[in-house]
Amino acid sequence: MSSLFFWEAGPIHVYIIWFIVLIAQIGIAEINRRWNWTIFVLWTGIGIAALPWVFYKAAPIIGWFPVGKYLLMVATATMTGALLVYGKRHPVKAHRIAIWFGVLLWIGLVANIMEANIRDLTIYFQADQYYACAADWQCLKGINDTHSVDMLNGLPETRGIAAAVGTTEWYQALAANFQARHIGIDPATGFRTIGGYWNIMSAVAGLLNCITVTGIGKIFVTSNKKQKVKGLIWVDMVWPWIIAYDLWNHAFLYNALADYTWYCTLALLLACTIPAFWWAKGQWIWFRCFTLMFWIAFNNWLPQIAAKPGPMMNYATMNPTANIVSSGAALIWNVALFVFWIYLIMKTHRNPLVTPLFMEMKAFRTVVREHCDDRDKYFITDMVPETPTQLGFDPDSPKPPVDGFVGYMPWWGKEDKRYPKPRTPLAADPGLVEKGVQSDPQWDSTSV
Image (cartoon, rainbow, N blue to C red; front, side, top):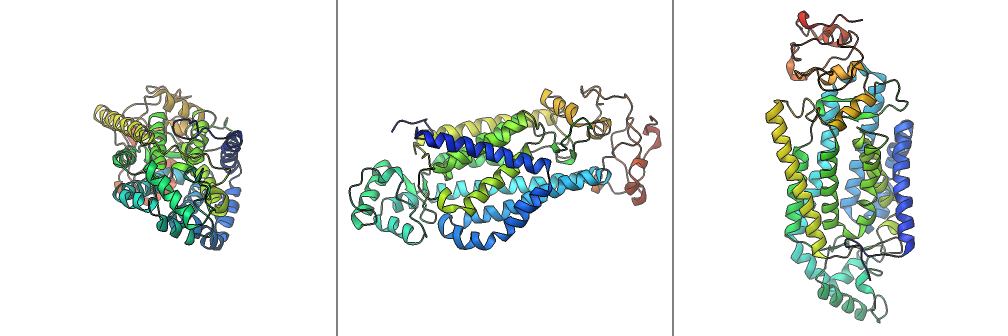
């Protein structure tokens, strides 16, 4: 069959299904963004209520790894929705504890990446076992015997087998086809995979992707009144990091779940990257969370459709060159990002976790102009020497507003360690005043 390099050039219906999946993922995430109550009804309420079904129906088909991912995503989606709602209702306090917003989101993000890195390394070290299982007809039979649905019939290696499905002769012919193509199979899940040094490349790229997460101390909710939809803004998550993540995630999934990447990378990654580059700038983390929640839920709620070989599938070519290209591109981009990350830290002397690192980038300025009023423009810059005007944020006033937001880090104790320059007075946050935090009044703004 002809190919698209990574995947087979499947029949027309897989392209139609792909488009439907893409639109559904974007649509659900957008609904969750606009009407936040839907998060807690759909993902928290129904998500938890569906657990018995997931344990009973999904686990025997897809294994416990995707079920664990489901549990993690239900918790992450609930937390992300709660952060947005809290930020809308308590903006002063939300800015005071913005670092904790960032820490929670960072944990959710990095936990997903590191979980994947462990999976990549597991495939590398168990590659010989996977190849041996695929070449052993009894091991293949054992996969179907331990799953509640047939996980093998319909795979590309079953094409052309004349023996009746499920017979010894059928399994023997299938094993011969796997061995001839040098393709392995995970006996726990029944998913085709090929292991090699590309798994190491992908894992290193994923680790670098974790390291280069920046600006977790300045995550906030849209304050610009011209924006009808208030989003959870991680302003430092600009295109160099997003592309680095996308390349890594595709590489990992192509290494681990190649047959599912037609949807879970090509569609799923575009479903969060398109909004972040178009109408929801600065909100990649939101769309990543809820598009992934949608896909994980679909796989766990309807595993007999999503996981079982069938007409929905557009199978991977299982060509090692595709794995090498995927992992190589991910590693090269993430290494380049890491070098750029170090360069900016040395040049600007910024703390890449507490303050944003990419403030001079055009994409960063665009997000600030679209989603920030002066209170947030001065909040973003209150720990660096540059002013919003110098950074091209176009504030309405050259002075920080007296009713703005006060940046604070919990390890400061009772000292205001914002950069010594004109800034919103500490009095704008009664909570910090009550805490007994001391500030130098010579820097207090007096603008009205």
